[in-house]
Image 1 (cartoon, rainbow, N blue to C red):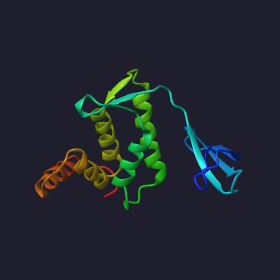
Image 2 (cartoon, one colour):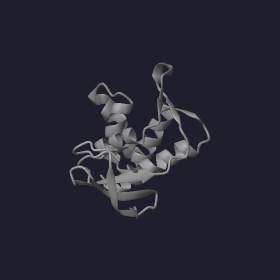
Image 3 (cartoon, helix red, strand yellow):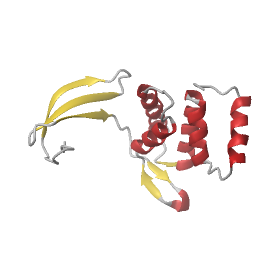
Image 4 (cartoon, helix red, strand yellow):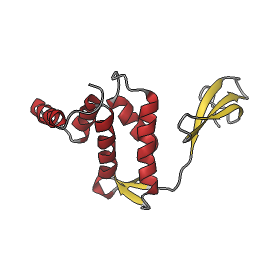
Length: 156
């Protein structure tokens, strides 16, 4: 594993343990070059899945893109990182176990929307504003009213 501090190629595993939900292995490593310690996470990848983007482009499924989007939507909302990780792991599992080698990005976006709707209503609206490309304040108002009518699950 390459050191994030000095880019040395070799590191030694000092400690390994599963995360609380047993979907990931947390490893503490020490760089053999500079001696710095860092943490890595190891997850099972069931299959290679391509994401169909607009214009018939294809990309390899990248969990970190979902993590980044969900974390940004939940920023300053008091949502535990563990709950974000569980949401992202659930989406990844759905994508990888669907049995398809290609999945439309719109389907992944809808999975994220559904997960955020249940997790936090403000994060849900934040994500929807980008995902559904809100262009005016009225778009926010209309969408927020549908969230309120549906009961607005999550921390408000």
